[in-house]
Length: 108
Image 1 (cartoon, helix red, strand yellow):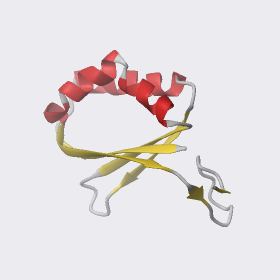
Image 2 (cartoon, one colour):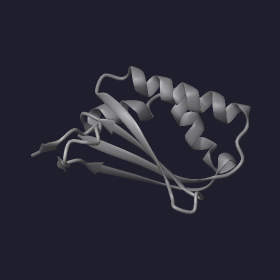
Image 3 (cartoon, helix red, strand yellow):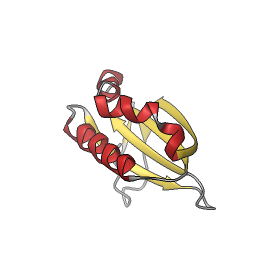
Image 4 (cartoon, helix red, strand yellow):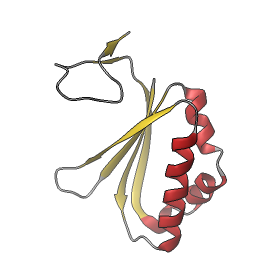
């Protein structure tokens, strides 16, 4: 499983941002291999971490090929004060079972 984290500090959003954001979310949801998302906020509320989960790196790569995604990447400085992308392989996920999660309770 692959987790792609999009960590960002929001700036000012406009109508084009919301349209592209929705198109990207819809495109991701339609991809085979897309498992779901998590969203976290920093304690002070200034940063957001949107985490997209995919079955494989090949599945994640498909998201980057969408026209809307490429368009948004070219305009990122209009809407964000800064961003960082972190792509990781999920090798284990476990807990007491009381908090359901996309990654489930699995160990490799």
